[in-house]
Amino acid sequence: MTESIGDLLPGMRRMGLNRRTTLAQLDLTYGAGYSESTGDVHAFPVTGMPARNAYQLIHDSLKFDGDPALNCATFLTTWMEPEAEKLIVENLGKNRVDIDEYEATERVHRRCLAHLHDLWNGKAGQEATGTVVVGSSEGIMLGGLAMKWRWRQRMQAQGKDTSRPNIVFGANAQVALEKTARYFDMEARLVPVSDGSRYVLDVERAVEMIDENTVGMFVILGSTYTGHFEDVAGMSAALDRLHREHGWDVPIHVDGACGAMIAPFAFPDLAWDFRVPRVASISTSGHKFGLTYPGIGWVVWRSAECQPSELTFELSYLGGVEKTFTLNFSHPACFLIAQYYQFIRFGRSGFTRMVNACLYHARLLSVALEATGAFECVSDIHRPRGQFGFTEATRLASSKLFAESAVSQKSGADPSINEAYNYGQPEVAFRFSDWFIQMHPTASQDVVSTLLRVRGWIIPNYPLPPDRGSIRILRVVIRETSSEDTVNRLVRDIMWATQTMLESEVKSLGEALLRPLPPAVSTSDLARDVAATHTETMDDTRRSSHWQVLLDKIGEIKPATDVVRDKEAQKTVYQRSC
Ligand SMILES: *Cc1c(COP(=O)(O)O)cnc(C)c1O
Image (spheres, rainbow, N blue to C red):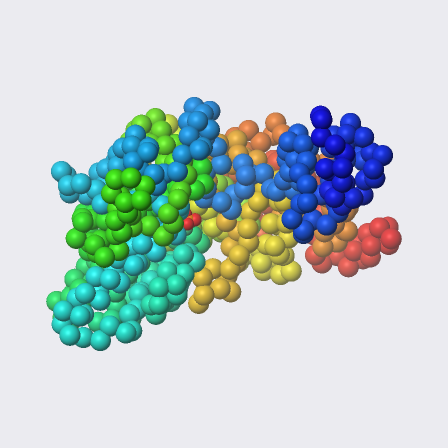
């Protein structure tokens, strides 16, 4: 510590310290030391501070973030093995784009592309055309751009106008799809979704929106809203028909942000990938079910012809000649390396077990939630294949199927179990059942979502896509790190939050929250117990008593007796709480 105090003066003044402050005191992190709340936090810092203090200050202020492990809203990877983290740290200083300097990293890049090309059933023996990107968004934009350029070349060759390109996709699209259209000057034609289309792309309505100015279609494998897969093969067949009738040759880019890393393992027989001739390109998020930390995605083209050469730049200023087709230039190499680690660490069998475990946990949660009577799922991942939407009959059918297959599903090794269930990604979108809303017209899913935050869970409550936006859903994404214990606790806490909300209609919220928490031990096997309770058709009276039986099951929570209607009791409680 040889710096003169004068060097530190401007910063000290900003921090409210005076000349007599000693360096020893300055090194305090708190107390008279540094804190974000003193001084002007908007001005660029005049002086620095010791590393230890900078670390502590930032470390502590980030505590206000939610816990990624309990963030049920995110699809992104929140945990990797220590060996993967070691590789990440070892390679943090490498820029992926310097392929001449980091020739071994480039080999990893080529190998990952080849693996994905193979996984997505690209033509054997053909070199994979594609690139690592920052995330699916960049992959989607590149896929959209390639389709736009190829369309323009086709139109120009026929001497036709190219000033009004459009691109067609479902209204359930993630924002990246709309960005692509707007950023690259294409009209976005959003296909309305409906209950009948299960809130995803409606093939027949899509066909109506296509014309000769359609550069291509985005088909989504794994709707963000509800986890349903869109029908790639069905869309392709419809486009074949249009091609025959009108000569419009419309390619497909598959937005496989989640699904492209799920379908190959859970639903190997589903043709959604390069087996479908119209699929020109596929993008995925390496940082979702590719099981790698945020900052990585992929886009792969069927073949080099699908990627217009004008979009590829050849650079020579890094030494050697390098070809790039990306939006971003520099890019961390470490996540690419971590992605390769996951590929060789897990292989097909490991990914299959992981994906199946996620699907099992998602189905367990779905069946348990529906068995409470209070909720119904808008997602269909737990229903027998071909059955969609909640009715008492579909509920019973899925709970029966789940009970029969729970043991073999749990082992996770056999993807054939998925043949009995609907396609989709491990995502549970649910809402209050009609019965529950009838009983409790003022009940609010927002309150349930907020109360769950008290327990650390982050579970968003948001509207379905435009056209069905009046329906709001709570959504839980099941990831690799979600265990059966997670589901048990989640079921308990969702019931707890729901009951607390009901009770707060007569008590103050403070009073409702004062009830003791059920002991943690009661949650083991809770979800499966709950799932197994409600195995016959119920009428409304039985639903009420059923809910109360379940509350007993989860522990100390005793429902207030018929809370909504008892005005007298309401008054007493109110007076007491004043
Ligand atoms: C997450 C997601 C995206 C965007 O992916 P990023 O990797 O976050 O850029 C696009 N489409 C769908 C369907 C998604 O789920």
